[in-house]
Length: 374
Length: 261
Image (tube, helix red, strand yellow):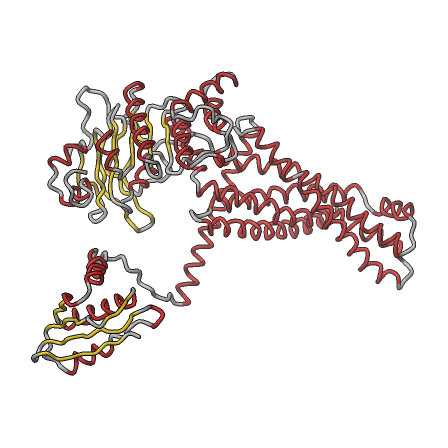
């Protein structure tokens, strides 16, 4: 147990006796008693230590002594360290060897509500400007692509096509089949009441082709591939690989973003079409298994209900969603800061940005298709 | 201080930095920097931690824009050049980054080969040969088909140097070349730097605080001082050690007081 006692020598010297064992587990000694002692004997000009009964110690005693030393400095009392064990003296000297750098300490101030609202508004405006600049740069990059001037590695493109095409099939199959089943199930309960079970085929067919196929694939790919793009590019930023591209005279937008965008633009329509058919198969499973329809009837009814316009509309939307996912992922990756947590934030932000962009685009498509009568 | 004076032999300075101020928003890192780097110099940018050495390097290669002032390559403003011209200037520049910054999706040979593919008309076999030669120069013969993640940090750094010298650049920038290297490798690296300078006439700019390297290879230098936020000393490092009166620089060059580093 740590113990401190005080003794006055002459009129102006205070002796601090340290005894017992000082360990962090036993808590830090308080300097309160020392301050009270100094207040009681205002004439004290010098303080010293007696540490004969001190058995063992660790950083707890150093913290206590640092407090004592602060108090002495404030009160103009000179502190004589000679009575302390050599080890403690050495560490205290070390702790005070480098003075605090002026301006190094951070001022912790809680900004007012108004200040925070203002700061985040400025932040939003800044990030919108960055997004527009990125869109502009990417437009230029695509123009260069069409003029056959853009440079990227074909092997990168093929690898990316494989990653966001074939390798995405299992998850797209699972989700699309389940969406088809759910749509059919919900529809069946309602339509059965009117003896109109056959229209489950129309419901599932039209919903999958027009909206759900493109939408489900897009949301899946935003979570799967958009996040991966952001993490890849973010990590490349941390390891200075992107700087290396820039100084080698290669545009990161052409070398990194362009192949990713092309891969998704090519693969999204295919995945969407695949998802449409798997969804319809899910609907058919319910139609045949629960509603006593035959496969032939179900397929015929679907073919009757779904037009080419529905299919093409859905596929077109999916290509647009592909661009949005790729751009959101790459933008957030390129904006990432220089730490591992920043890469995580970039991946999160890529998914959020991607999904928001997809939903917004979906709304715009709904209005445009309605106006055009598609 | 003869910031922009021409060199003795009448040649234009290779790089001129004119009134450069580096800042992040309102936080000024260094201000009013003027210095020139001559052809064939091994130029050392030194300073304590947090003095902005690496940031200065980023300014020199256009990865960060100056808050004020400009960087000139052979009297042509790099800061004011458009993107296409900058790329042309950078084609004569090689950079080795602190961690190597190899492109992790490519093998070492592909890392080097990409530059040759883009900027030369060599055939794939010739490119492979040149890449092998560059790797052999940094002591990595036989590692052509390794990915960066399969080799050690020190080897990555050397491979980064092999990539930087792929196109025989006129200027080589090094960001902390010996950090993280064992003493023998770092000495070999120093020798390699001098060899490149002597055989190809390459101008070398090194950001470092390794005293051994500073005195072995540097023939000119500047010292960035954290407190005054500007360049406080300049000149050949050995001369600075012998003559400088600046107590901070003396402490820096003598590891805090020992006169024989």
